[in-house]
Length: 261
Image (cartoon, rainbow, N blue to C red; front, side, top):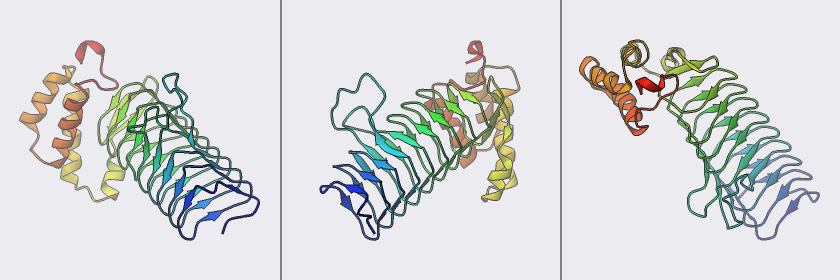
C-alpha cells in the first residue's frame, strides 16, 4: 500500500507488501525491503538500504545527511537490517565516506527522539532508549541496553550484553556483560538478570563477576588485571570475550583512572 499523498521517487526500490503512509517522503537511491511500514511524515533519504519487516514511526529521518564537516557531498550510505522498530522523531545519519557507512543490525528497538550519528554501528538485538544520543563512529554490541538519555561520545565502544543506566555520559569503552551507572559513569556490577534470562549459566555469570573484580575493584592497572584474569578465571567464552574486548580497546575502559590504564 502506497498512499497517493506520499512522495515516492520513481527510482526508489520497494519490496513486496511495503506500506507507505500519507505524507511520507521516500528519496531517490533508496531501497526498502519486503514488509516494511513507513509512517506519516517520515523521510527515508538517499543512500538508505533497509531490510525486511522494519517499522518506522512518524517524523523520523533515516539516512539524514551526516553532521560532519569532513563530508563533502559524496554518495554515502545508511544500512538498516531486518525486524527493527524505529519510533517517533529518530534521526539516523549516513556515513561520511562512500565506503563503510552507518549500520543498524537486526531486531533492534530504537525509542523516540534518539539520534545515531554517522558511521556508527548498532550490531543488533539491542534497545536504544528515549532521547539517547550516539555520536559518530561509535559501536554498540549485541543485546545491549542504553537507557533513556544516555550520551555515547564519538568513537566510544560498548560491548555485548551491557546495560547503561539512564542519563550516563560515556566517553570511552564499556566492556561486555557489565552495568554502568551514575555520572561520572562507574562500574555497577554484572548484568546478571538479563544474562540469566537469556540462557547464561550461573557459572558463566560468576566468571564475569570474578574477571571484573580484577579490573574494577583491586586498584591495579588494566594491564595487570588482564594477567590476573588469565591466571584466575577458567578459559571459556565469557572470559575470552572480556579479554578480547579489552585488548582490542588498547586497555582503555570507562571508569578506570588514567594512571591505571
